[in-house]
Length: 163
Image 1 (tube, helix red, strand yellow):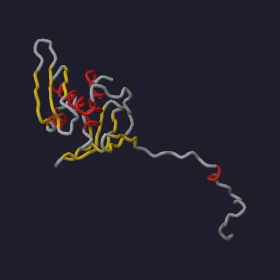
Image 2: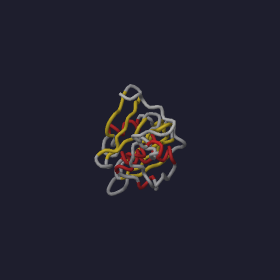
Image 3: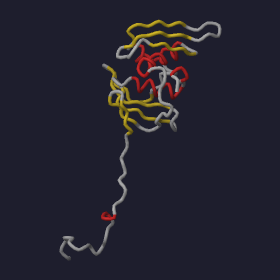
Image 4: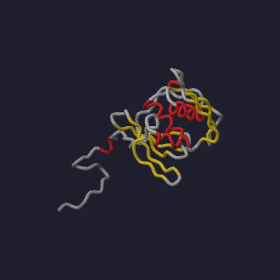
């Protein structure tokens, strides 16, 4: 998927993935419509909803990582534009959007992942280890035939003494 097309929960998710120096876990709430994160930014723990696409409070985490920033608001039906160099980013990136916040967030994701990201967004709880992500959950082992309880025991079983 093109970073230029990211909106709403997909944009929030990829911004969270881009904050791998801060975010430890990504979860989904509200039936998968909202991103929630767990992490610690210097001096500020975060455990809950993370919606930078609609909140400047969350988007400020991205703004704080900008080393060079040029923002221009769209006028008379034109898109907002952002050119930025971010701390830890791979390159200077550009973003466009219907608002300066969207342009900033798209530029941030592009600085981390390039112009495209994976189409399939995992809507499961995830743990971030650097840029790598791993699904969080208990792996259920298939039941083994040897785990089936047998009231009479098996040959070689050491059973307790009768009572």
